[in-house]
Length: 192
Image (cartoon, rainbow, N blue to C red; front, side):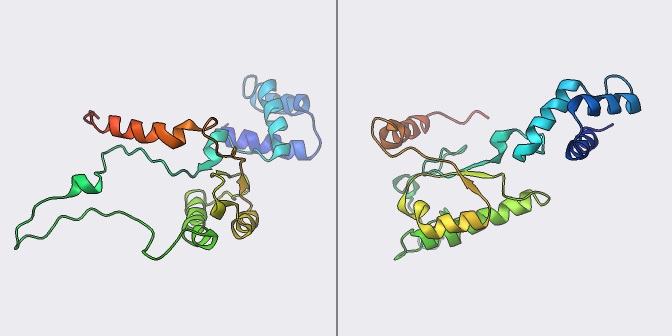
């Protein structure tokens, strides 16, 4: 019997008020010894009240938003991308997605251009799931903490994980380490 069917049966019997021992006994009587252990039935019964119904690793439900990116392949800086091109040749293009000129990232931009796309992608990636078990972790930047963004995330039932306040002694990596690491890592060739 497949795990999803067993989990569905355990949930149905749990909703009807049966204990883990009773559910284990029923499954053993129907499918024989070893179909499911008592500890597995008890484990799922502990998870159901908190809404954890899938076997997915809990960290798979966390979406991170951060301004530091480490690329698998090297993205050249503007200075490194410069090249001489003959008059009749066209210059090579390196696409960089960025905020349009004369536009600042405010709460409305963050909601409309970032979060709405994120929610669409989550629905596309998990069509049978809802977003109410998704946890978003982004920093305390003003656009992220604005009521427009907070209300949108509540409407979409996305939980926001707390982020500590910015401080040089609490998060030194954001202030100097990541930039230093990126420059150092750029000197190593990609071996994979």
